[in-house]
Each structure stands twice: as C-alpha cells, then as structure tokens.
Length: 114
Length: 114
Image (cartoon, rainbow over all chains, first blue to last red; front, side):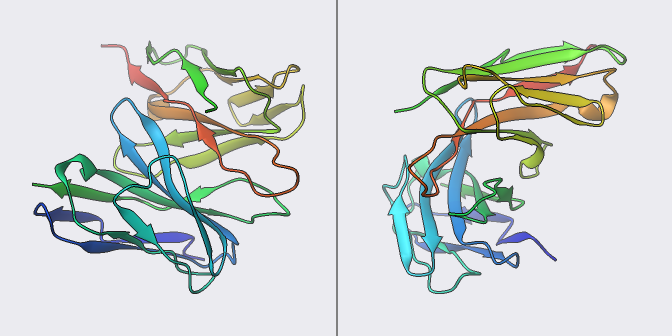
C-alpha cells in the first residue's frame, strides 16, 4: 500500500497562474480532505469529500476548487494563484461514515506564489 | 466555530525527561487523535481515543480522553532526541452519524534543550 500520495512535492507559481495539486489514496477510503498549513495556524480545512461525486467546503475554501470523480483521487485546483496561497498543502483520507475516523496524511506539497 | 486550545505552544526537552501536553475545547468531542509531524513531512497518527476516560498507550506515549469529553492529554516518558517535532491534537464532534470534520490544535513544538 502506498497510502496517500501527493504530487508535486514542490511548486513555484506566478501570481495569476493556475495549477492542480494531485492526491491519490489506495486504501479505499470514502472520506478525503485538503488542508493548508501555515506557520502558527495549524491545519485548516480547505475542502472535503465524503465519497465520489460529493464535495463540500471547509474553513478556507476561497480560491480553490475540488472534484471527486473516483474514490481514489481528489485533486485540488488553484484557479488564479495569489501570494496568500503560499503554504504547505496536505491531503488526507479516512474510512468515512462508519469509522474509524483516523485520517492519514500525504507528504505534502510546498507551494510558493511569487 | 469550534476551536481547540493546545498547550504549551513549545517546549524544550532534555533526553530522559517526561513531557506532557494537552488540548482543551469548549465543545464536546467524541474522538480525539494525536499526531506527530517531522520537518518536511505530513502528520503521522500516534494515538486514537474514542471513549471518555480512555487511557491508551503506544510505546512511551500515553494519551487520555478527558471525562468531560472537552480535553485530552498526551504524555511522553523518558524522551529521546527523535521525539522532537510538532505534536497536534485533533478532535471530532458527532454529527449524528455522518463523518464530521477534524478540528486541529495549533501544535506543540518539541525541541532539544541547547
């Protein structure tokens, strides 16, 4: 099992560019989520999905889009990158409704927007 | 919204010392999770707690689910250099059977005493 994988590991964007951060899991988890981590702010939820075809907003969704066409994949799209989106992005997954509810994290994508 | 207060924010350890940290909330949680994050990596799950009053160990780590369901504690006994990192607590409220979202504390950073 690879667990949760994320690509790329590092990315530099110019303001206004768009890009997609990839996330995949091979544990057949229903629940997947995206967080951003900024110094002193902990982990903040951007978007989440409770199953294929179902997504919803978290605490800080503005400027990001998600879709979930398969159980395995949950990409995060930055529509028009801004310096405020410079952060480390983590994808996580868990079993979902029936539990257990432990979330497993990917290794992260470090994004810099200049 | 719900918030978790994690303390201390940072602490220095000397090899062999015991370490304690805790998380408190004004809301009731049904699940408490403790994670550790090493530099440049994603958070890794250490301990999961599901019942009020539960005390669970994982090697030198012991965590407790407070009886009020509003707090949790993590203790590390006889610390070693590889214990350095950032420790996060996370709580999950019960949303009537659906998968709620984890709420994260802002972390406790463990460093080695100079």
